Amino acid sequence: MRFVLDVSACETAEDLHRALAEGLHFPAWYGGNLDALHDCLTDLNEPTELIVRGTSALDELLGRRANAFRRVLNDSAEENPNLTMRFEEAVQDSIN
Image (cartoon, rainbow, N blue to C red; front, top):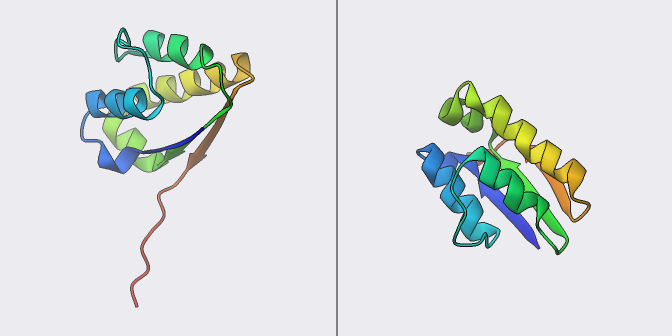
């Protein structure tokens, strides 16, 4: 599975967690917090590539919590061999 999380499409931290839950098919008990995120990511049983697009938008959206969010994603990928993480800047549309 490959899921691209477009952070620029999220207006709140809740939107971010909702997008992750829907895109990665998290269970109904997912609580929308970093502990639950770690639990769900480390429980993924199929090969999953998670691409977080819009790293500067992530800083704007989460402020000081952005680093903790990144750390949870990276730590989860280290613990779960089925999870691959990648962070990207948003792709800019070219103007002709």
